[in-house]
Length: 136
Image (cartoon, rainbow, N blue to C red; front, side, top):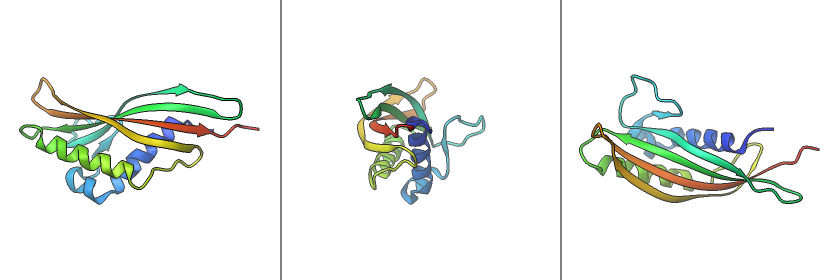
């Protein structure tokens, strides 16, 4: 049985690396753990949580997940452009999971932050609900 949040992370990374509009801006630089020599800009699959939401016949999970955009360009324009492209890539067409059912996946908000080193940082927050098949 595969974890719904793990499958969602794999689907997000796969989608971002396969979307021409995203790769035109960041190449294949989508990371879980950023290599020490990573070039900017790049995207990371950030913090998240998975909360059980079961009913009698369904094993369900509410999933909250952040996708982070990192830029060293002056100001926020690059981070905003990349974050909007990432958001659109993840929402259309709908993501699918191989073993679990993704009931919904939606963008909740995007925050723009100036990091202490001067980097621009966008945090895209998504929420999802997935159902895990019951093992018989």
